[in-house]
Image (cartoon, rainbow, N blue to C red):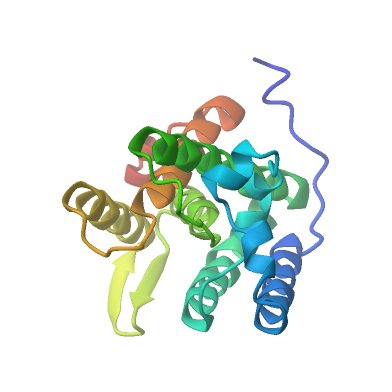
Length: 207
């Protein structure tokens, strides 16, 4: 367990900004070569046919400009602060691992439910994990929803997660991968327990 919690040497290389740049470049490529989405989005049949890279590449593809904008805005607001707090190496591991594991989880759900025609894309699973980290590291931070409604970061994150849970249970928001978002949140929580030895709930409520 001590080896799992050994900290990386701290450095701040603005990896969050690099990830944002990659997402933007991939989106531009999607507009120029629409077919590329077939190869980088996560599809169960493609995975079964050996395209296992899709567990990672799906996180860098987006279905619309709005989809890209909201994810990258969240990554800029929360990801840069989390990276500055834990260092770039830790942040990159956290971001990629939670996103990839959310992809594996979604793949399992699609196989179980027979949803073989689904193409999963977007960074939202990893973004939910990043928002959890932000709320745990900066529990007193206040976020203004729509620039108007002030909410403490933990309330915002837990509120979003509750909405995702309700939506997944009742099928609201067709086409939105609610379970992928929840999986990112869950794997982020598990990362905190294993890697940092911290319970995010106690960090957020100050216990």
